[in-house]
Image (tube, rainbow, N blue to C red; front, side, top):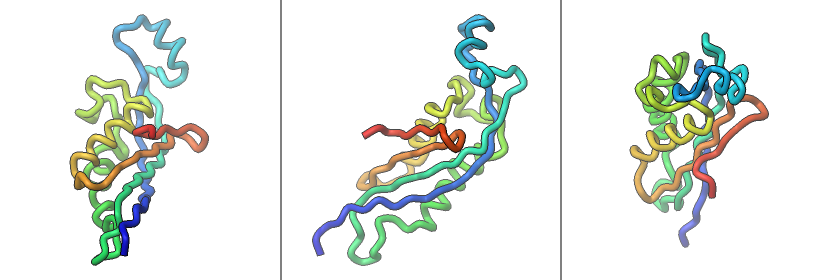
Length: 139
């Protein structure tokens, strides 16, 4: 059988609070740029995360990747660290990074990419709301 590239997807969900704020800007600029997302007391989102792994189907297993292994990896690397957390205060990852949806997607990508075999491609889609989402990397 010739090689067949296939994308597999795992969808997960986590809840987290954050505040968008640039400490180098005056309060007025932060309020103007980030609006409600600059709330001093933070605000929360119900994030939907879609992890896409792309690779060749293994001729022996029939898998691109074992979905149980992918699920376990997402749980350990992402959900256990971010779910029901204040991203600004409770995580090392966002200690010095503004936790925008864009930055969250990049951090998730980097954490998962480091744990996946090199022959697999990875793409992250993160929904901050039902209508607002980001993807990384952009192809």
